[in-house]
Structure formats: C-alpha cells, structure tokens
Amino acid sequence: MTDVREISQIYSPFPSPNQIFQVRRVLIALVVLILAGLNLPSAYSQAVYGTIFGTVTDPTGAVIPNATITVTDISKNVSVTAKTNGSGDYRVQHLIPDVYRVQATATGFNAGTVEHVQVYADTQPKVDIKLTAGAVTNTVHVTSAAPLLNTARADVSTILNPRALENLPNLNRNFTSFELLTPGTTYIGWNVGQSTNPQQSQQIEVNGQLPFATGYQLDGTDNQDPIQGVAVINPNLDAVSEMKVTSQNYDAEFGAAIGGMVTAQTKSGTNAFHGSAFEFRRSDAQQARDPFTEYAPSALTGKYISPNEQNMFGGSIGGPIKKNGIFFFGDYQGVRQKTGSSVQTTVPTALAHTTCTSGGNCNLSDYLNPALQGGSTFQIFDPTTDPASPAGRVPFADNIIPAGDVSAPAAKLISEMPMPNTGNGNITNNYVASGSGIFNTDQFDVRGDIQTKQNFHSFGRYTRFNSTLSGAPYFGAAGGGGFGAGGFAGTDNAVDQSVAAGGDYVVSPTWVTDFRFGWFRIYLDENGPDYDQPLGNELGIPNANVGDLTLNGGLPQFQIDVPSNGSNNGSSALYGTSAEQYLQTENQFQVVDNWSHQLGNHSIEFGADLRYAMNHPGGSQ
Image (tube, rainbow, N blue to C red):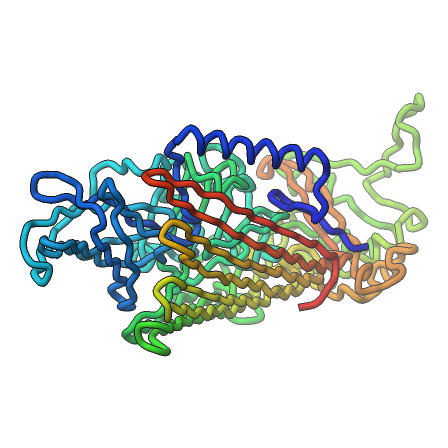
C-alpha cells in the first residue's frame, strides 16, 4: 500500500472554506499594516541570500539622496547597483554568501569605497558611507569595523565560515557535529542506527527541544528527513561555504522548526580556479587492546585486535566557465572503513550444548553449581505443572530435562550456537568473538552559478550519496548481533539524493523576487543474514516463513534473559536474525517563491513555501 503523507507547509490544490477564510484574514492584516505605515521586519529570503544596507551622508552628516551604490562580489567580479532614496538610505538584497566591495558615488563628491564586507546567508551587515567633497574620479577608501551590536536582527545564532569548518577539530568530518558549538545544544541520549542513517547525521537537542524540532536547510531548500528528523544530506566540509545555527528568534520563513534552525550554503566557483585534496587514515595499529575480550590472538587472523581501519579521502575544484558570469564547483568524498570489534556474551555451557542436541536428556546441572555463577543456583521447573496448585511448580530433578520434553526447535538452535571459549565453565559471559564489518561511502556535489545579467542570478546543485554496510553475526548460523558498525548484522545499501535550484530577479528598483525548487530522495535497502531463506521453518517452527521470503525469510529473533550473579547484574542476549527486509523510499518536492517590495523606508515581504512528501515502502533507487 502506498502511504502518502503531508508535512508542515504542505497544501492541497483545492483549499477548504476554512483555508480561504484564513487567507483572507492574512490579506486583511497585510493591508492594515501597510496602511498603518509600519516598518515590517525584513527577511528577504535569507535562507539563501544576505543583504547589505546603510546610509550615505556628507561630511556634515546630511543625507545624500540619489547616490549610486555599486556592490561587487570580489571573487566573481559581478556587480549590482542601487540608488539611495530621499533619506539617503539604500538596500541591496539577494546577495549570495561571499566577500563584497561597496562603493558610493554622487555628483560633487569623491567616491567612497568600503572593502571586504562579509555577507552570510540570513545576515544583514550595515555599511554606512560618508562622502567628502571633491571629484567623482577620486576615491576614498573607508575602513569599516564590524559593529559591536547587530541592530538589524534579533536572532540568536552562531555562524561558521569555511576556515572554521575546515580547521576546527572534527574526528570524522561530520558536518552536523558543529551544531554543538552553539550555546544551548547537547547530544540526545540515543541515536538513529547507522543502517537507517548511513550519513551519521547527529541528533542534537537545542534548548531542551527534541532533535525532531530542529530544522535543516541546504541552499535554501529543506534538508530534514520527515520521519527520523535528521539531516538528509550531511555535506562534505570542503563543499560548505558557511553554516549558521539559529537557536532563537529566527524569521517566519523558517517557521517549520520550533527548536533550532541549521542552514548551510554550498560553495560556488570564482574567477580563479581553486581546489583542495585530503586523505585521513586510521588503523588498528594505533589502538589499545581490550584486556577482557582481546587477551589472546584470534584463531582466524592471529591478531589480538580485529582489523580496523578508516580511510577518508576526497577533494574539490571550482572556477569559471565564463569569467564574470558563469561558474562551477564540484567535490567528492569517499570513505573505506573496516570496523573491528570484539564482544563478550553468553552461550549454553558445553554440557548443555552436548546433551541437549544429542536426542537424549538435556542436562542443565551446570546451572545448579554455585561455583559457576558466583554462589547462585538456577533451578529449572517443569513448565507443564501449575504454579497455583497446592504442589506448586515441579522442578526437574538435578536440572535434567527428559528427552521427550526437549523442544526440537530449541535443540536445533543450540546446535547452531558456538561452544563456550572462555570463563572456565561459567554459565554467563562465557563466549568471546571478534570480527570486522565493512562500511563504504561515496558522495559528490556539483553546482553551477550564472549571473550574465545584473538583475538576474541563478544557481543549481545536485548531491548524491551512496553507502554499503555489512557485518557477520556473532553466533554464525545462530545469528545474534553483528560486527558491522553499530552492532549491525546483514547488508544495507542506501542512496540519498538532493537537488536545489533557484534564482532571483530584480523586477524594478522596488520589487525583487526569488524562487527555488528543492527535491530529495532517500532509498534504504536493509537485509538480515540469509534474509530470503526459510531458516525459521528449517529450525522446526511451523509457519515461521510464509509468503514472499524476501520479506519474511531468515531466523526469528530470540531475546533471552541472562541470569544475574555475583559478577553479572543480568542482561539479555539476542539470537537469530532479522526476519524482515527493510525497504524504504522517501521523496519530497518543494517550491518556494518570495517577493520583496520597498515602500519608502518601509519594506514588505510575502511568499509561499509548498512541500509535498511521499513515503513508499519498497521502491527502487
């Protein structure tokens, strides 16, 4: 069955009467605000762009109307112009994150220039320029320091530039880990498993809100898995031009989030070619041994520590396709990881293993020996007797189960379990195993930017992430947890894709619009060991595997309590394999259109953000 879900900010094509009433209320409110002449807070599609604004004055402090403002992207050498209004104020919107030069010219004055104005998405640096009397051909360079207090915005945020993203310590180059640099953030006590979150996007609380309350955007389009709440694309650090984490007072444009808002922008090319390359490698040669599980060499590898290595490599390149107009950027990151792990767990004793699988009586007398379990004894009772009867439950003499009472599926499962290999005959923590799992990923981004006309800029980006995860089970044919990353047993293949495209167009000196299209797709195909084999039926459990074996194959899972004793507080051991294939495909489409209008010294913005999400069990890449 297809499951089609709607998330926040998704609207049907046929509005209900209640929706029409709500729209009318919004329109009336806008008209009232306009008539009242209020100066509305301006966001100007800050999810992708930034804004530079300020006032131009003469040496006496008088404003200079009709001055020409030229804002130039230094790395691309593309410019946009604007005019100051009657109050000497100007505002240049829809600037992609970069470093800019701002120049003001007016008749009878020397030109004034402010260099190196850093613009981030969702920011509005204020650049005031004071012109001195003279000829326009003369230029006065102004050194402008960043203001101590941002009076243009009320949000509480942390911004990381490319230098910070590339140089701050980050063991696994995990972009979402940088969210923890914002005050009020902390790790949640649990995380989504690696098999369903192969990009290992972190789950982080912002101001005590659950991770699902934090929104993620990449290049102004939604980047949040609507089911698990994590970031869909965890971008390569070499591809990110900036990251901003807003914890309070973010714009209404980000209204889908109630906790925090994490926005990121990918890099674009410049007029010069730039590139990078990296490789980071770790292996078991630098690891310390676990004295409890790695005290002897493995019979398989001859090593104390299971093979463990991680090789992360990649690079990026960007530059011009046509100088001063068309630019490209691309990057790649690969991971080849072999995760070695060891485990100490519990299997039936050698006596139980031998007798319970022989077809005769099942001898569990080891479990009555206090010397084998810290002074405790564990009596086995006949399950066919009634504990409510006067005689109560009847124990099996010496913990020996008659052959006729031994469950055939249980005997079969025990026969597939390995023998104890540690613990001097103890009934718990008597088995040590080690092995390695494979986790490989490939991820790349390609982006293009076009600005051949001063009043129009467009961009497009495509990202693809592939991963494979595998691990053998602890108990071999008897299943159990695995040696794959995060204790995974089986195979898992994932493909995440993301598209962001858009543009901004200056319709007139007072009207500006921008539009964006976003799409992401999540594909997961997870299978347990021998997931398509009738192992439950072969074990002797009737109807354990019926119908389509790709969905209902494998061994059933058994979670058995481990008795507590003087050295063990009790736990549970998992046997068997996942009996169900996990196959999931998610798609989300997004269309955004925003309009900005300058009305004297007042500014108004309105727009729409439409999203349509689909969750299909099954599907293909």
